[in-house]
Amino acid sequence: MRLLNRSANGWAGRISRHRRGPLAGLMVLLFGLILTGSLYAAFSPASAQQAQTSADEVAKGRQLFLVGCAFCHGQNGEGVLTEDGNQIGPSLVGVGAAAVDFQVGTGRMPMAQPGAQAPRKDVAYSDDEVAALAAYVASLGPGPSVPTEQDYSTEGLSADEREAAIVRGGQIFLTNCTACHNFEGAGGAMPRGGYAPKIRGVEPKYIYEAMLTGPQAMDTFSNGNLSPEEKRDVIAYLGSLNEAPGYGGFGLGGMGPVSEGLFAWLVGLGSLVGFAVWIAAHTTRSNKEKVEA
Image (cartoon, rainbow, N blue to C red; front, side, top):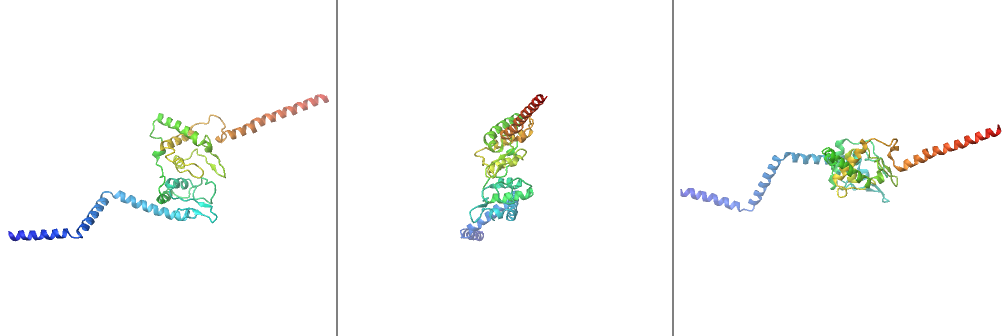
């Protein structure tokens, strides 16, 4: 019995001495990290897979960026300046995924050549490639993300709530947007070769992204300026314009009082002046014939 007690005490002493050794704490820490990592990978494989997918998407986006965008925006999105200080392409650091989704998703980018305005044209990339480019630019710096359908859709609202949203959106649009886009969203000319594009019939997601990022000469209406709900209300108002019939007859493209006034002067008053000249000429000819008779 004494021998067993001595043996047990000897083993306990050796274990105690090793536990107080300099490598014991490091081994315990390493074992804890391995155990934590194994449990995390076992119970959340979706998160790890999502992170790997995001990394692959960013890498794919960078390859597309180097081929189609780096000439104007630089290999790292830092922007490009000419020797005389003119800017070919602005920096994309911090513009966010929403700006890329708008510009590339509407075909405005890549541009054939730098200019005052980037017109909408056929899209050069697939949806997956647009998403990859947006992911890469988003990795350059924090910026607005691509909105979801819940941000700009009124599908979940009741009929009364939707009508109220349209009214609020109309007030916001008439206050902030009609100076450039016209009261019907038909667009208009801007200084220095630019123009405000027509926004009737444009996809709601792109209208939301335009307000959020401020492309070209447009002001930026961040969430601090216009809340997400107010942006949704503006989109609801524009949607109501698309659905409303034209009660005024020939609307002249909805270009506003300038085109309407020009039409009134040329067609309306011009017709009256022409009719008056015809009456005067006809009266003079009739009087002349009577005198000769």
